[in-house]
Image 1 (tube, helix red, strand yellow):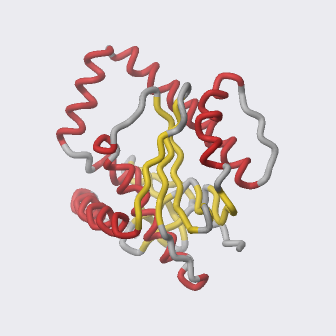
Image 2 (image 1 turned 120 degrees about the horizontal axis):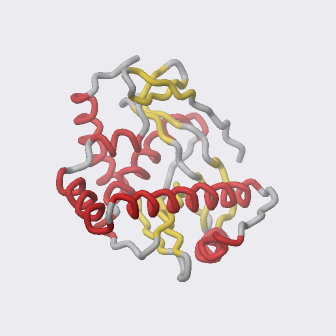
Amino acid sequence: MQLEHYHARTTRVNRRRFYEIAGHRYPGVTTILSATKPPEARAALNQWRRRVGAQAAQEIAGKASSVGTRLHKQIAAFLKGDMVDIPADITGYWDSIEPLLANVDEALLVEAAVWHNAGYVGFPDALVVYNSKVYVCDWKTALKPKKAEWIGDYYLQVAAYTQAIEQVYAEQGIHVEGTLIAIALEQTPAQAFWLNRAEIEHHWTLFQRRLAEYHMLHPKLL
């Protein structure tokens, strides 16, 4: 099945990033989650920065961003059926996540923009048929394994993507059956965190609360 890929234009209003798409101007999912991060999560991040030092924290974040960007590029190429050329320094991460990619039957969307009339834009990494079921996938990298309780915002992210995808592609009858958050690690198999439909709905409710909080802080700009 071929789904139309949409693109959003980035714009800034009062130094805040928005995306323009389909006649709307909305904030992104990650912007919303960052702006409404709970105080305890901010405190934990600040504590880590103090522990490792400002310079080390910046270097770690920069390396993680570089690895993540390049791995995403190769995964996107793989899903599109294009040539994959894995740089030597991310081979471990590719080897970590490749077994999960092997179970993808078909890629319906790869890094396309979607939006929801609740007031946000999202950029899901992929919508795929995975073991004969439709899944929203999000690819992550990490230096160390994650615990489920540490990645609450990841769950909110894929729940928001799910709802937006189903709204944008309602006429095509797209129904998401689950989500996969795959976290590639350099020396061990990737972690896979799954949500079924009931769990997606639970996290969608939680995301809507964060979205309402964001719009209270920053009124919509249409």
